[in-house]
Length: 314
Ligand code: TUI
Image (cartoon, rainbow, N blue to C red; front, side, top):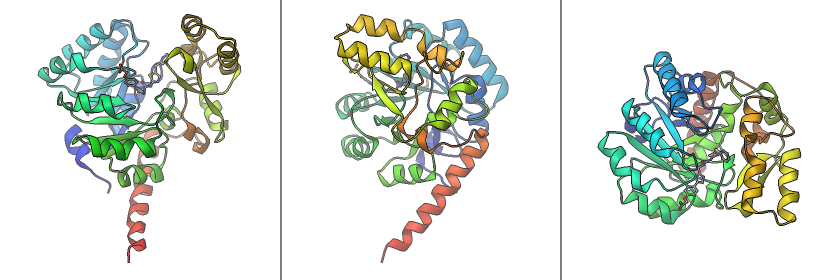
C-alpha cells in the first residue's frame, strides 16, 4: 500500500489530493474523493459566500473524512470566502493564482492546514517562512491558471529550496505519474483533469467527452499576454483568444472574452464557446470512472512500478 507523511499530516489514506476546480469541484466530487481515501476539495472559485456555505454543508453530510476548500485568489471576495472556511472549521485550505501570505497567520491561528499552490520557487520560499503545512508545486502541464515551469523541473528545485512536504501537480493522471512524483521528492500528488472525468463530477458530459477525445497536443495556453495564462482544450474560444492577442487586445478585452466561459463549459457543456480548462495529460484519459476506481487503480499501479524499480538497482 502506498503511504507517505502527507497521509499522516492530512489524516487521509492515500496521498492524493483532488484539484480544487472551480465549478467542477462541488460537494459531489469532494465527498467522493474523501470517501475513497483521498482529500476532496471544494473549488470556491466562482462561488458566492452562500454557495460555499451550502457546498460545505453538503460535503459534511456526505463524508466524515477530512476535506478542504480551494480559494482562487482572483475571486472578488477572498476575505469573505476565507471567513466561511474558518467559521465552518474546514480542516484544509489550498490556494491558487496568488500569494496567500497575508492570510497565513489568521488561518494557522484558526487551526487550518494550509497548502498553497505555487508555480515558482521564490514565492514558495517566502511562504515556507510563514509556516504553511505543505506546498503544492504545480507545473504548466496542468489545466486552468498556470505558471511557466514544468512539473519535472519545478519539483526538484522546490525540494532543494524549502524544508516542507511537497505535493506534485500538473500532468499526473495515473500510477506512473504518482511514482514519478515520489521519485522527484514529492510526498503526494494533486490531480484535476483525471477527477473531472469521474462519474461523481458534475461537469457536463460534453466537457468530459471533450477530455476523453483529447490527444497529447490538444491543449493550448490562452491569455498569456493578460498576465493570467490559462491552459484549455483547443476550441473556437481558444482560437478567438489567440486571434485577439495577435491583434494586440488589451488585458481588459481578454478578461471580458473569458468572462463566464468556464461556467459555460462546466455547467452548460458549451464545448465551442466555453473555456475547457484541462491539463496536457488529457490525452491519457480514456474513460469516465467512479472516483474510488480511479484512486485504487492509481495507487495499485504506482505500488507495482515502485516495487519493479528495485530490479534496476544492482
Ligand atoms: O489556480 C490554479 N489553477 C486554476 S484557478 C482556476 S479558476 C479560473 N477561473 C476563471 C479564469 C481563470 C481561472 C482555474 N485554474 N492553479 C494554481 C496556480 N497558482 N498556478 C499558478 C499559481 C500561482 C500564480 C501566481 C500562484 C501564485 C502566484 O503568485 C503571484 C504573486 O502574487 O506573486
